[in-house]
Image 1 (cartoon, rainbow, N blue to C red):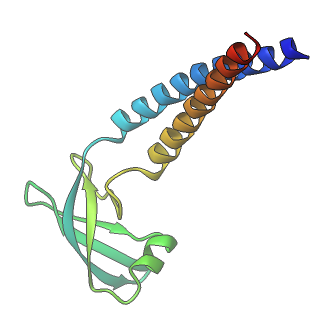
Image 2: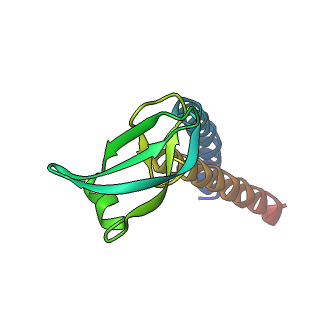
Length: 131
């Protein structure tokens, strides 16, 4: 029975650290591909196909994007909003500087590494408890 607990703790530590490192690498690649998002102030207007937001980019160009349903709910009743636009991209904006997808994958990586750490500590406690 003791060897079974040792094996389970060992497996969870390897899986936690190994998958955690792999998922952290994926999160890093996602972060790098996400690009740079700069803050600006956008003007909200009603259009025939929903609400749009217009803003000036760092080069002085005018950009516009249609709001998604979630963005419309978050900005309901506002005529101006703080937004983030992608440097070098036309018509791309969001309400948060960091990507929610990157954040979710990074939290998954942290959870897996934490699982590996807990399994390693459990393995060490079992090792010294028997000795």
